[in-house]
Length: 373
Image 1 (tube, rainbow, N blue to C red):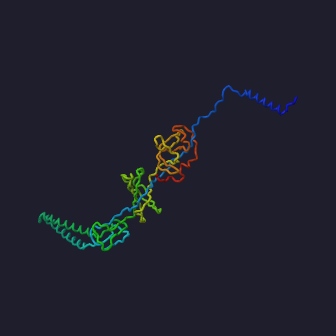
Image 2 (cartoon, rainbow, N blue to C red):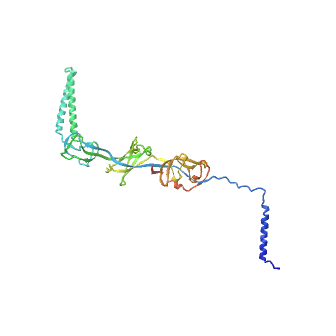
Image 3 (cartoon, rainbow, N blue to C red):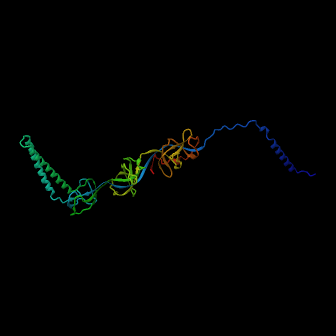
C-alpha cells in the first residue's frame, strides 16, 4: 500500500477544518437582538455658502451726445445802410456792448441832437404851462396840447436814438465773433444776416436717453464729457424733457459743461457719462441669478435657520464677471454652489466656501463705479 505524501495530508486536514468552521460558525458571537444603530442626526443636502455685506455702488449712464455752444445768435441788420466800418475782425473775442459793425447813419447824430433840443423846449413850455394852469391863467386844453407836444418830442428822440443804435450793432453777450459775412461798402437790408456770435466759455451737451433710463435721472447730477481726443469736460445735468420723441420713444436731455480754456468744441460729438446717486448693492456671479415662478430675477440664500430662501432682486448693472443687485438682506448668506438642487423652505447643511473673492470686487475702495447697461 502506497503512503500518502505529507503535503497532501496536511492540505486535506486544513480543508476539513475550514469546512467544519464554516458549518458551525461562531456561536459565541450570536446575539438575540440586533446591534444598536449609531447615534447620528439626519443631515440635509449640503450647499456651499458665503456670507457677504452690501457695498456702496455708484452707477453711471453712458450716452452719445453732441456739443453745442451755451449761447449763440445770428446777427441781423435792423435798418438799411451801407457798411462803413468793421471794428471787430472775424474770430475776435468780444464783450457785451462792444460795437461789431458800423452802418451809414445819414446824419443821425445831428438829427438826434436837434430832437433833444426840441424836447428841452417842450419840457420848459409844459413846466411853465403847469404853473399858469395852477393860477388858472390858461385853459386845460392848452395844457394838454403842450403835454402832447412834449410826448411827441420824447418819442422822436427815442426813435432817432434807436436808429442810431441800430446803425452801430453791439454784442448782446460775451463771446467770439464766429462769422462776419459783409465787407466795407456792402448794402444791408433790414433782417439780413451778416454774422454769428458764439459764447463758448460754457458748452451744452445734448443727447437722447431711452425710456428705461430716464427714470433714474434728475437735474443736477454730475456729467463728464469725454472727447474724441481723450480730453474731459465736467458739468451737470440741466434739463430733462417731459415728453418722449414719438419716433424713437426717447427723451431729450441737456448738460451744461465748463470750457474755461475756450477750446473749439462746439458742434463736436462726445461721450457723456452721467453719475447717478450711490446705492447699496450686493455683487455676485451672474450665474447665481435665476427666475422665480413669476419670471422675475431672484437669488437663493439661507436664513438664520439654514432654510433656503429665494428673494426677488433688481439688477442695477452687470458685466461678464459680476452682477450688481439690490433687494437682498444684509448681511447675506449666499448659496454659491448647489442652489439648483434645493427647494425654497428646505433645510440644508451649509458648507463654508472660499469663493468670496469671486463675488466681492477687490477694489480696495469703499465704493464701486460701473456703467448702467
